[in-house]
Image 1 (cartoon, rainbow, N blue to C red):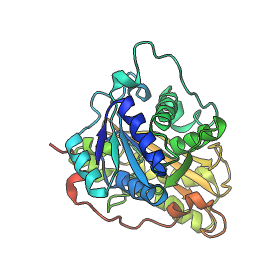
Image 2: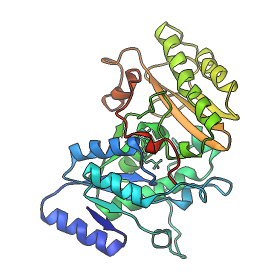
Image 3: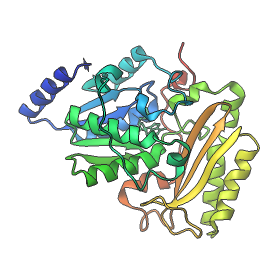
Length: 312
Ligand code: AMP
């Protein structure tokens, strides 16, 4: 497995892979890898000859009062996990390289990024869209896999690739969860024992709403209310619970399927997000790329306990 840190080395490697006729797949990450990331790696390995994992905590997608400085990192563990998963190369550029002092060009998606996380994190998706465009250009990716956990991000990247004619295919992969339903996230390691115990309320709320939907409930206020009730009991603050359409992420008053039920809530100081796709029938209504998530949760294969707590 190669570890690449300079643009020159990355370009030379891309040229070498292309000369050999190998297709390039990319999984962009901010590191502190867990089973959710590794599932994306396995996914990209099925679609491309080489799998590149980028590890870059992108400063421009964090707001001034967000957790950039305390974002967890453990490169040694990431390297080990990548090796064990058969990653071809890790690309880990520095912030100085990615954003030199005279950097002044931004990529701004202007529709899908308005609501949900875009509303509470101004500038976040501009940072994401910009860094992902750079990573696509630097790695020559022909296919890139993103997690449905960050569904707004994934749809924005899909849109930007289409709008800017980027020669990359975007794949959205299902959410990987802990055995109690909590969506895996690098940020889970910031949760105290009590917060970690309470955090599965997010998934409990989502599945309550999904069950009510399956029973015929179509009123979005009622469905959202089921999630809010679960969260109110334990979350420090609810950022949003919204039901939106799966293409433009516009709020719905009556559920038209497939719809996205999306949540952001704080447990202590840690902001967690999650979502679920509501659909009439997995086989007929859900777009192919979102099908996998519709079926109800089943426990993921576990790497053990290492991803559930901050590593020393
Ligand atoms: P991050 O390192 O948090 O920026 O995430 C990198 C990629 O992994 C993004 O495409 C995320 O959506 C995806 N991801 C993070 N957590 C999960 C999860 N629990 N299940 C599936 N994908 C995930």
